[in-house]
Length: 311
Image 1 (cartoon, rainbow, N blue to C red):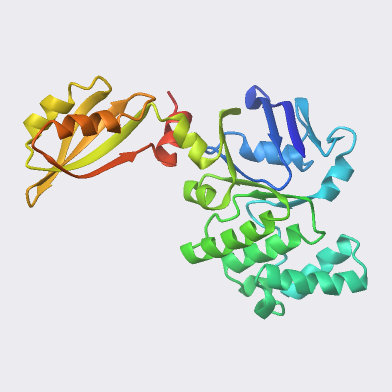
Image 2: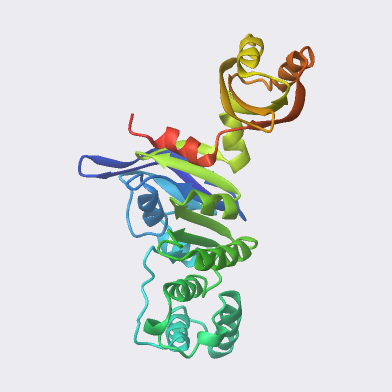
């Protein structure tokens, strides 16, 4: 559906995008993650025709941004970080104005405005001035604007920035509903937003893609380092350290605490293998009672931090 081919963008001597290759399938909700200045917004602005690349290209459904940018723009709905709304207009009048700009006839326009009022939860606010709306409802108006012409591709740049937790959930639900029928590219640095909304995550840092996959795939890719947490009865920390520390893959044994005779221990493991069976066998050889054993892989936050840290 969308292909980034060797996409590069320089601002003077600053390389914002460095030979990026990326394919996005139809119907995916893709989260584009990265720290500030990583190149996320630059990539989106090139896709939507606001910027031209220094080299490389983007193709959407076989059309290239060099030759067919107007046709590609017709396929795209775009919501920038700050929705460009006219605060003195009523919501209905503003969306009516956008519908006229998109060339909808009267019959299609009335039908579409009614649909968007329901899709974006604006039914009760259609005749209120935009400047009276909360930021969450202003974002809903911006979303309605971006999907007015029922685009195949929806590009959202930081759509939940500045919203409170309830507003974030509401906007997230709207995006997930839209994503069932369209290709959605969502740029953000809010990791929980990506986990809750996106099918696929692309992490970009200093203009390069440093990770690509689902949340589970990214976590599995870092499985060479993980933690096993165990709770034992009839056990002392020194004995546990001596016994389990002999397993080559366990690099550290730490006490988490002891409560009502149950010792909780954290085992730091460096291996691609799941060594819980080896741990269990060692425990069986002792007079300990295993109460609990769980494995923790790295969180998305930790993976993101490691991939985007300065050094």
